[in-house]
Length: 209
Image (cartoon, rainbow, N blue to C red):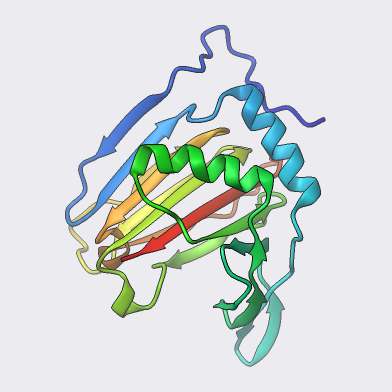
């Protein structure tokens, strides 16, 4: 069983909350939102039991694999379009409902779907983007949960060059909430790295008003 328990005499399961002061955005980080024991169990279970898919995208007229594996889960069996692909929405399972219910106690939102991303190593990544279509970004909630390797989550304003990029380390068991007009005004990214790192599973629970 893979364990991401940090070798740290000062490690704790206390939830640490940080609210970031960003214009036209509402971004909050909860470190240790899931305990180390919960996070290890969920990482291993999700890795084994998720129906991971290799989606593709077109670059210069050529089909190439997305640099990560993905899976969609939700309350319906409809197809969902993502990165030029139509994926089948799979029904919630026990692990996802456990995570979903925990987040919903914090944000008081009933999430309708979840995109899972499996970053196998440092070469797996996601480039700058804003979630949802432009006409849906005004009022959204995304609950982003990380299990596994810590990766930097980068945020930059979509139009204002005077604002510095923000880097947020997303650690094992953390929750990052993005609400309100965040998607309308800010882009985000998980960059590649040449370092030898372990895998990361990220879950983005989604709600659109």
